[in-house]
Structures are given as C-alpha cells and as structure tokens.
Image 1 (cartoon, rainbow, N blue to C red):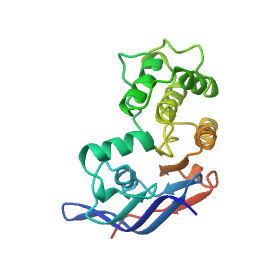
Image 2: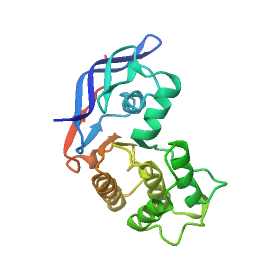
Image 3: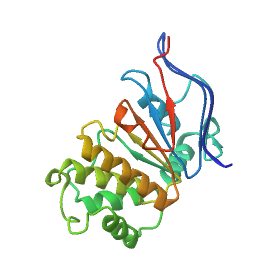
Length: 215
C-alpha cells in the first residue's frame, strides 16, 4: 500500500501550549479521509504541517513518500507546488484577476507547462464554463468554491487537502461540496484529506480521523 500521508509522533506547540499531538495518522494514495474535531483542536494547524507551511516541534511527516524535514526552502516550495493542492477555508482568489486567470496562475506558480485545455476541462467538469471572464466578486459562494477546487487541481496534484469546505454551507450545498471534492480527487487520481469540525461530514468520506484538543 502506497501512503499519501504517513505521520508518526507529531507534536507542535505554540509557546507553552501544545496545539497538535498525534501518535499516528495514515492515508493511502487515492483514498479520502475526514479529519474531524472541535474548533480549536489544531485541525488547520495539522493541515499546515502536512503542507509544509509550518514545521513541527517533533515527529515525522512523510507526504507522498517524502520526509518533509529533509526538504528546505525552495525545494519544499517546489514539492508543495507540484504535488499538493490546497483549498483554504478563505478561498484567497485574487480579486483583480478573472477566474480563468486565477487558475492559470496556479499552473505558473507550480512551474508546470501552461495547459489551457486542462483548465477548460476542469471548468467544464465543475460547471464553470461560460464564467471564465468573471472576477471572484461576481460569483456565488458555491461558484467561488468550485474555482478554488479547480485551482487546487489544475497542476495535477497527488494530494488534495481542504480546510472546512462546508462550514459556510447549508445541508444541501454541504453534501454537494463534499461530493464535488471526492469526484474531483477521484478523477485526478489524488488522495483527499478534509479537515472540519462539521459533524455533517461524517460518513461521506472513506476514512475518519478524530482529533481532540491536547491536554
């Protein structure tokens, strides 16, 4: 079994307060998992650790069979940009650019060849065709979320991670967003990790990992 995520004895502290304390967490390539826990238990911090955006105090994080502690500076940036897709709770779409330009920019930042055909295919699959010239402020929340998913997938990542993707959605749209993430990851052959405090997510992904607030 190939692992997309393999974490052992992971700890991260902010000052004297332990924020993340995880003995073991694994996710196989091509599978999906919900990381569930109450607000303040360190879920977003865990996602940032997995993405290499912050460094742990101790423990081992292997992502796509790479030990993140062995990657430094620009090498880590290149690894993240090429192999990981991120959908943040705050979508961070650039307001001055059209949604088409937002997604193309993600390809440039990942240092992969520009592929407008792939962008068009993603827009078609995510029901965004015809909106290419729109700017983010012109979109509904659901449309903006789909753009963020397209941006996260456009460079062909092997791991897709989403932070609280259902928190601002009603029940129907929450189920739709989860299905969209799963379908998009499955079509791309990517593993999917969703971190959330939303109990409605339970049962929608293949695996669950429950976090608690460290003592």
